[in-house]
Image (tube, rainbow, N blue to C red; front, side, top):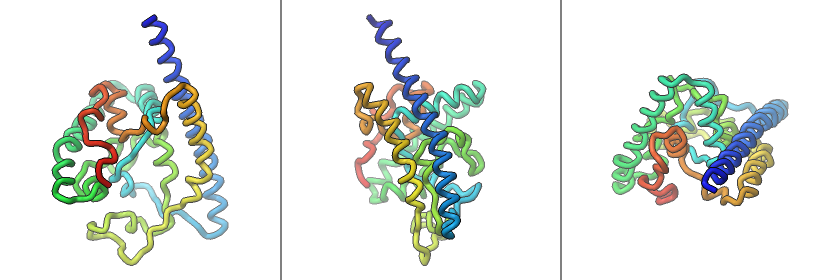
Length: 225
């Protein structure tokens, strides 16, 4: 029975990975089409290579997509590179467990704690995403048409205080049906999709065998906004 359960769990995980990878491919196509349509109306994203302000925020990911990210890493990177990445995950967990709670207790908001005091996304290398081909839908749909400096925290000296922050919401809208397909696969398996949401580094630490379920010893995800 134990082997049967293990085999079933592996099959379900594979279904989630396949669904996520298919969703990413469809999302890229839909986003490309929408960006082209928006360009005809004069709406052009200001995001450029090397701009990583959004990577200094909390990146929440459901298990299905995190599993697909982890599978991509295992396929694409050699073991020394994965080991180095595990080291970055350990550093991130230390910050989240030790420094982050102190900041919150001192009255610092979550967004400022992550942006100004936290470690950048573990996937960043020289302000470029090392997981770009396998980035979650949250990252794929986050574009702005305003100045990138409007994406900074207000505490940042370079924050564009006179510029209105304008996200390209249309991309989230066109990708929503794709996102719901992943959710449908998870819920068909009998799981609560929203309950599988954790910060991406927590999931990767679990899936890449840094720690088993590290979120059990880290601050609650929505403890204080």
